Length: 207
Image (cartoon, rainbow, N blue to C red; front, side, top):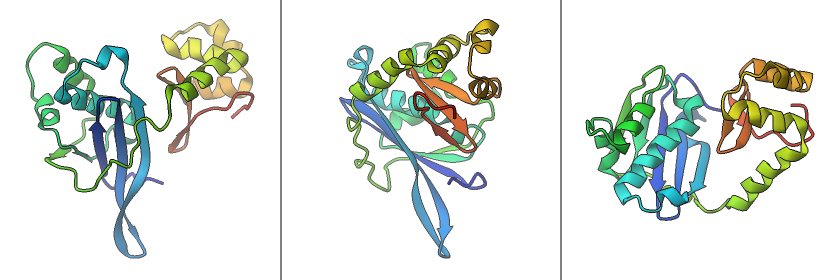
């Protein structure tokens, strides 16, 4: 479990096939400071991203990781560990192009201090960016069509729909969680926030 009172470390890396990130913390275990993972995330490159250069890809990885891990990082102190200087330049760039849009996306509601190290101090090659292929996530998205609650949630969350008739059509347990803002949609996948964790709902379950 993460300790919300101590800083996080965000390791990011990209390659020609995908993006990867590892969120770490240094905690005291058996009276010794020990760095360990909080979570790992990865995804494959989209067709619209294949022409990005190495620096653009690393900047994309940075912003994508912030968006995915905002629950942990928003308002928290954290370091970003990357071997790409472009990520540091991203924060100060004034050119009105794709980079500036990324910079704006990088501004959380509660700004956090971000320190960038020139080179990663621990390897993150262990993150296999292509470990989970697109087939798995495609099957998950397809399964939502088989479940009424998931199908409704996808419609509600995809475009921030406010249709009360759809909300009322949800199972009572799901409706309560939706009203509390516990459901989130990332890349077409529904996640349910429980305390300090996000889990992927399994079709047919009410939690």
